[in-house]
Length: 244
Image (cartoon, rainbow, N blue to C red; front, top):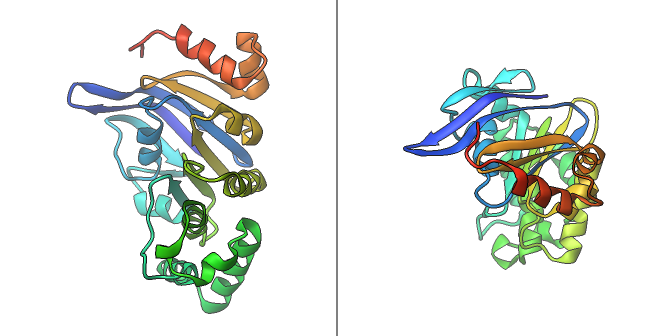
């Protein structure tokens, strides 16, 4: 579902990504972990066709992001912690407008909104204006908007940021339920407990380079630590800055 081969991204003299290579398979929740500035968001923006790599190749669900960006965009849904909503529209109106962009018909849209209402516990967010939303209500609708077309690849970049405990629990339970044939969820976070709960495999980035990847038991075994947060610190502290 995802192939990243020797990807670099350079801004002037600054190297945001340094020869990153990764693979993720269908049916996985794949965690992308690292501190702020590690290169996580840069990499995810390349996957979402919002940035082009300086060098390297990225293939999402069989489509090269450079050669076939429109095909990739049809197959992905993207959520980050800073997305906004039109204040005057209700959640239902937001979802209807995005369903129309993807060419979904009336019956399919109504059925999909009903399903998302169940899965994300949208409740009254559907019928009040976005300008009245709490942070958690807004983020639920942002997620629903991103997946209205039932994408094969879901990219969640710090999607739990700012959520209260109830909204965060709904999100994490939803992420765990996204596993399935022909599907991949990429979950970027710097909260190790979230990754430990929802991810099948993880990759740790630091200063633009890949430090390690593997299942959580594999990462723990490499470090001899008892939890992912301790393993993360051991790996990051032991990595060589600016290595390619």
